[in-house]
Length: 586
Ligand code: GTP
Ligand code: SPV
Ligand code: MN
Image (cartoon, rainbow, N blue to C red; front, side, top):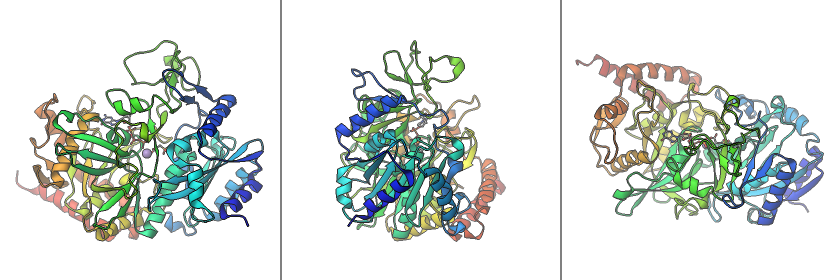
């Protein structure tokens, strides 16, 4: 008798006709074989063995360097359940279209069967997935990003309780690229891309799109959130989870070296991209990081902005689409003050400024989480960590103050639902366009976003002691176009205010959008920032917010009658508060 997994592998191999099938065990020898295969195939180089031991540089097809949202589909039987913000195909059409592309797609290739666990061993929150892929880069990456190999296979046993994900590089033609999710079957099919979020199916496809569907069915939450612990001088650690859109600062915040370390405030990293959250027995929400590595943005990363990751990525790291120096060390814009000579650019050409940046703007490092000096002693705790604050944020050149606090859970859900951010290089398409991105989940919600917002409202009722909800904006710009706030390690000053608000201490003034720090409430010791800049950072301009409110209304109209009543009411109230301020005597 074959197991459900063996049956699936068999059916996939009948469709894709691989040259051979390899079951991955996650061992060191296997990882070395993957590196050798990649190097043989010509798209990968070994980096300097002395300064970057066991590190490689992978160059992807230049047309395949970011997530492709326009060809990412949620394939529900009823179109309504995919919702107005997702691309939809019927499951039949998707299987027909993608099936054609999978047909014999592994003819000359090895098919890897990659069993993995999302979440630490022994956690009731962990889930098993199995990816089938014809890419050794995927195998090598999944080994870092998940708990991949024999342990996951052993845990699965004969069970059918796994999320199958089928991936093939196909011919890498963007016109034949599809990332399809079948949440009703908990199945993923991805073809035509080797890029991270499109091809490492445990990550966005499973841990967010499929998991968000499962979470709604089962009463938990799957969110695009970092998880950090803020240690106070007393030694007490308070955990916070933050949702910012792609390339908006999650990894950097989760790994920061605190500017207030001298005062006893320190940040511990639990996760940098995804959180699975579940109500605990004490009425609080507990979070695990389902991943085991960081797939982080390289450009702009340096020993000032993120010293922890700079230390972490000196070994066992995969660099993707960065530049490389003549010393065979990885290099990217913003890494240091050098402009090294004889850099090879991300496409493997001698770098000249005329060809654009040396590193692709969405070039990344893939590094095991445990290599981070800031990794929390609780990062693999099977019970997770209790979350005291949710923080939403995005890139807003104007409008959103440095930080504000929602008045209660329902208002906080509204704050998350109305998030917006300027788009980044993490997805193909125009960069710098402001778009609404509820809870940073717009590209990752595996079902109708209206139902997702209702699920958030419902969770508040199920968690007697829910996290307090905040919104931050590190990206406000002054009249000169420059960022007003220094960001990075100085963001701890904002985390400290958040902590003090949770503990009922810090001062705030009430504005129509929520509680904003009073001018003296933030600890600014050691920071050279003018009073006028701080005032600008904390300013709430009601006239601007009235425009924002109208814009939010247009976005919500997409959902028609499906928009939850609780969100409708919050929207109406914000409008009234803003009008009240505008018409109040000055
Ligand atoms: P994904 O991995 O795509 O989900 O991105 P992320 O949210 O983890 O973003 P990440 O921390 O990698 O930061 C992305 C970019 O934002 C990098 O270029 C950072 O240098 C920049 N960045 C991060 N934090 C700050 C900050 O506090 N201030 C400013 N100005 N830039 C920041
Ligand atoms: C993101 O784009 O949000 C990422 C990178 O974290 S990817 O895994 O490609 O989605
Ligand atoms: Mn992300």
